[in-house]
Amino acid sequence: MTGKHLAALSGAVVVAAAAFWLYRSKNVAAAVDATELLTVGRVDYPLIVSASGILEAARSTSIGPPRIRNENRFKLARMVEEGKAVAEGDFLLEFDSSDISRRLRDETGNLQKVQEEYQKKRSDFDIQVRDLKLQLEEAKADLGKLDNKLSGLGELVGLYAASDVAETRIRRDAARRKVELLEKKLGHVTEGGRLDLEISRSNENHYKVHMDRLLDAMDALTVTAPVAGVVIYRRDWNNEPRQVGSYIYVLDSVLEIPDLSSIRAKVMVDEVDAGRVRVGQDAKVTVDAVQGKVFEGKVIQLGAILKQAAYDRPQKVAEALVELRAPDKSIRPGMSARAQIQVGRYPGAIVIPMTSIRERDGRSFVQIRKASRGDWEWREVQLETNDGVVAVVSAGLEVNERVRAKPKG
Image (cartoon, rainbow, N blue to C red; front, side, top):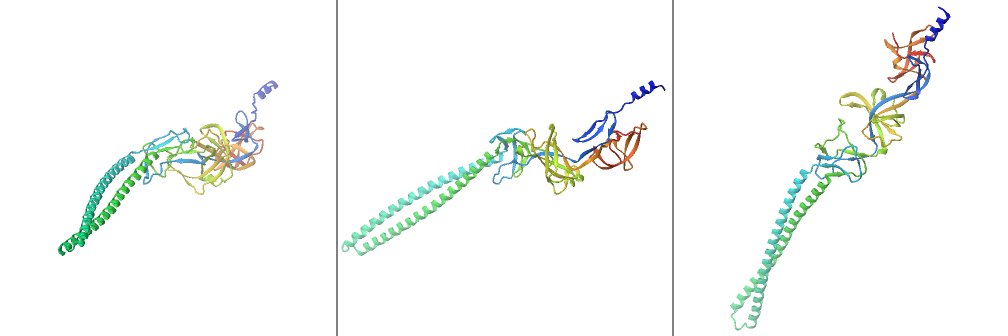
């Protein structure tokens, strides 16, 4: 082979240019050429635990059925659409009023009946008292006449027989007893009648109070916003909002108006990772609905017990709350969120992608480029940890060695 041929052959050999392979941050990288080679280097590698969940507000105003005496269940008739911005006093919910309307009609009928009974009793009482007063006046007049007659007989006792005096005295005494009896009867009738009227009036007031309560309840069935904000529907155990026509118990919440300045992420950490998560660890949160934006935060609370992820997902998870340092108006409670929680760091670590590793019989291997021989060499490596995308190599690789990005053979 001539020197010219050797030069041409040498020019045909393509030497891959190195670049940094990135993962999650600028610090997590490995050099890679334009084809299939990765140049081994050391980086500060953050150990990340991934978790998913939803956004929620730390402070919010819950909205549900009104507090109405002796009412425990309400039928939802109408509600404001989710995501609507409302001002204080704007319409939020309306509950079915048919039952209260029926009771109001019944109470109105009862009130009218009691009022009619009161008027009849009042009329009968007035007539009876008037008649007794007339009888009493007549009895007093008769008594007066007999007293006068008896006084006159005393002066003319000699002109009349003693029997006439005795008869007049008997009639006078009878007239006095009649007056006394009529006075007592009038007193009893007056007292009894007034008591009966007071009872009727009390019954009337009773129904009036009931009607006032029912009227207040009718008004309360239309719920307005106590504060200004954005409406968010509350979800049930199956992540479903309440529907018009469904029944709501008095302590249930139908929707909420969150304080958007207090938005945080509530995420579920898998059981295998829960032991590494601690309060105070930094986290980065992304929101599916807001592409290209990362929110910085930290873990402020970790659930003390594990629970089932969902009714159809048997795996166990721990609930973690991530406080966002600078939430903005683009995010809302209920949006899906993903958190990358930094649970540790490997300074100066050798990091390679999982795609460059081949597993054999529980051991890990990579292909190393041997430039001197122009071929590849399989080498076993020891892995410290991995996150499913990249792995930290604790032994088996040296800086500046070149690893095949996707092993072959």
